[in-house]
Image (cartoon, rainbow, N blue to C red; front, side, top):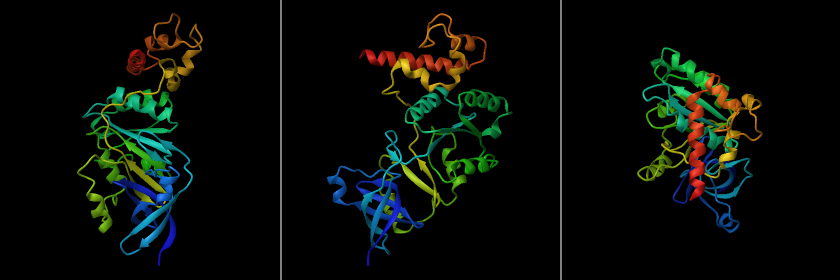
Length: 295
């Protein structure tokens, strides 16, 4: 006899949705009524599911519950925050890419935590540098070492009870952090895990990893470039909280901090009160957006 339960979509491949409910994962199809009302289920959605076969872990999604948020890139619902991972060194952090990610998340109103992994390779000089830059920019900064298990408690604390999208370029130890946070992330889920395997040889999909009943990590494909779409050059400065305290010293209201005279931000960079590297990235982004608008 079938029954109706609620659950959360943790993965979607080829028209199948994998729903986590009560510690089990069910393979589901979406009912036609959802297509009729033009609702496409997303990873992260809370859904009403009718269990078809409890032994084979199959069901149908009958309703998508109200979303509190949805992201475009990556396409996911109900995310509370983002955790972006870079290495302190080996490889050195690509701050241009990091700043792009921060802008993209801020535009989508997703709070972001920055984790610098491989802290055991540093003598604290680089850690102090990056902490100073990004805490001034308004972000929580965590340093971790999967080798020494450093930072684990702090990471677990900030993830508890939330859906967190985990992102970062390859080679920074993102998978190691995932395994450290959720040693059972690769736990065998029987037939369902074998069914999910069939999608792994194609393009990687976003996937929610249950850490506990109310805590999920969303593993997203690694990124190497982020284009700053849908942003006007003149609004770019609004994504830089670290500029705010110096903007009061700008001569012109609405100063873009590029070539204007008597600019408080440019002056702060020259006095090393603001990160030159972060400001240089800002200039690059500004020109990139301006150039794109020409075509």
